[in-house]
Length: 568
Ligand code: DPX
Ligand code: MG
Image (cartoon, rainbow, N blue to C red; front, side, top):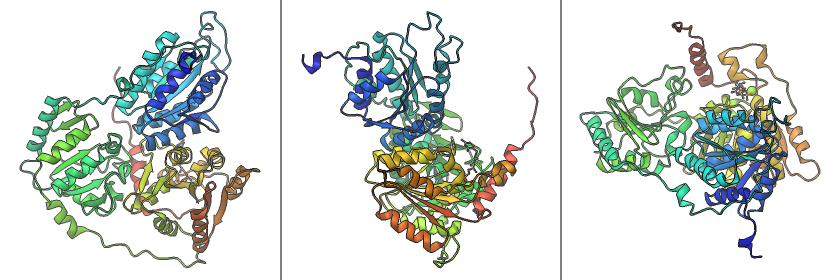
């Protein structure tokens, strides 16, 4: 029997589609509802199975892999697995990443026979997981017959790739190995939808109208720019205009920070490089892929108050006009051709540009501080580093750093799940072995997903984890303090060594002084056989001025009293 005659199954179909869209690693946790499916996926020579410690981490690892690779897959078992994986799926939704969540599910005969099954609510309903998944994905499908699998799998994956959102595919345990027809050309799934030509043209004309007569245009870049694949076009537009370019915190690195037109991170009161002064001076604001939420607007205190032009991933809005199906790269590319040069905001910015900071270099025996950690991490950044910053003061410390050309920056600011950076950096680094991945993470966040370091050990991924131990949930202290912000201290360096067991090569180091941190970073730089965790101990009250300021505004936004009762 030739390979072509071999029985082709639903699982093979899914495996082939995943490989065809460029997925090379699939993140999994096994369970009896998905075992045959996992066999089929690992039989595909283009896919490498990556086992994770639990489904939360598995989904977050896939989230990080999607950041690097453009799409990812997470395969889990029914309910006990999938409900945990919903968290990383929510992150992928919020962060605009096409994560394909695949769950095994009960045998198709059981619902009709009113059987009560394990890993379920025990009430005979097996549809709830699919119903829940609909809320956190752009397309959810539940395969009920093998004949339907090709159509449903293709539909879910296509929706995810186009919308840059997660999708959900449920495959019953007795269908993964059932016979299935072979797939047609992958272009039917992956083909890009171009802009509507009339809408694109009208949006371009409207942009000219919006900019005409405006003297002080500024571009504000948001996190959806990269998700839309429009970074090169934005650069062309910025250079054609010659104006100031500010970047939202979640978009750090999406416009090169060494570019002369980069004016800093626009984040209200905690902006860097006087970006807020120039944004507030503008009389035209070209918002590209921006997200204005309570965090990015510093508790609604930094919402731009001039009429905006907002170019989103697939539509553009102006004061008084809206254009659907205008794809961001095409729109920005077109705009770059038609705009006129106006560098007024750059001329003004050059008068405002803050002098470079002369950072204090601590003596080797000085007790470690947050500022000294940042100073030393800054020196680690090069064209091949990728820096992950975790929710907590690590956000503020990371955002202050200057990214050299080529350095990448990853942040999960919309979803903001503490613990994200450990599994996400693991997934990301699997795709980018040639890059040096560094994680800045707090003690509280680390405790949420610490097990995934053991996968970095297992797969020998040389991630450097800078764990900032300030003994608790400091960001929460600044927003609202209470006994709940204290946590149990761990011996983090020893924990990492425990993950080694008999065959791992991770290093766990402690830095109490500036000199110890420098030595530990030197060890990490040479260590390639696995991760290096450096526990950096700092004083509990040593947090950034930006965190305190931002925390005060977010706290007062949280505390607004109800404005009016609903009258139902
Ligand atoms: C919580 C946050 O130690 O960082 O620098 O000390 O703040 P800092 P840590 O990692 O502590 C993080 C902690 C508890 N946020 O301060 S930001 C609420 C929260 C969240 N995600 C999840 N649960 C709770 N963001 C999953
Ligand atoms: Mg902490």
